[in-house]
Every structure is written in C-alpha cells, then in structure tokens.
Length: 87
Image (tube, rainbow, N blue to C red; front, side, top):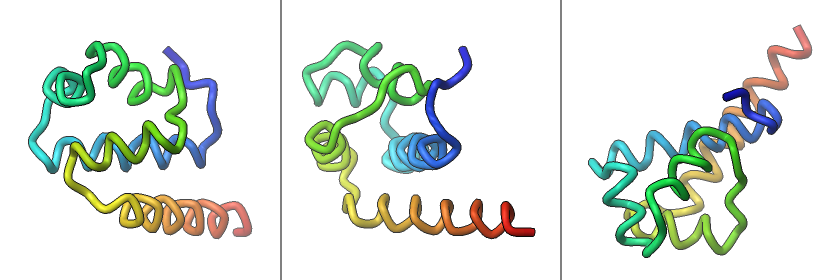
C-alpha cells in the first residue's frame, strides 16, 4: 500500500521502525506493551496512519529510546532531503 504522507513523514516512519528493531521488539511485542492491537503498530509503520505526539511519546518510552533522538534523526534526514532538492 502506498503511503499517503510526505517524504518527510516517511523519514519519521523509517526512524521509528529502525528504533523498534534496534530494541529487538516485534510489532506484536510492542503492541502488547502499548495495550494496542498489532495492527496499530503495522499501520503507522506502513504509513497508513500517523502517530500523534502522545502516541509517539508512549511508543518511544516502550522502545526505550529518547524521543529527542528520533526527532534529531528525522531533522537530519529532512535536511539531507532538502539539500538534494536544491541540487
């Protein structure tokens, strides 16, 4: 399924997937900790839905990553993306 979101949101999505995998959590395990169905994780990872700020904070807490680290990685990715656009 094609994402309905921007390239910038795709960077965020990929950062969240990488953080989950680095924490060695499956979608199912993460969802269980969040008390959500596995489809909740699958949908935001596939770009079918967005995470709001509160959901983002809950997910990063469970994964064990500083939310600011994710934001910095996204910001770096967006900067790289905009540099490519200027070329």
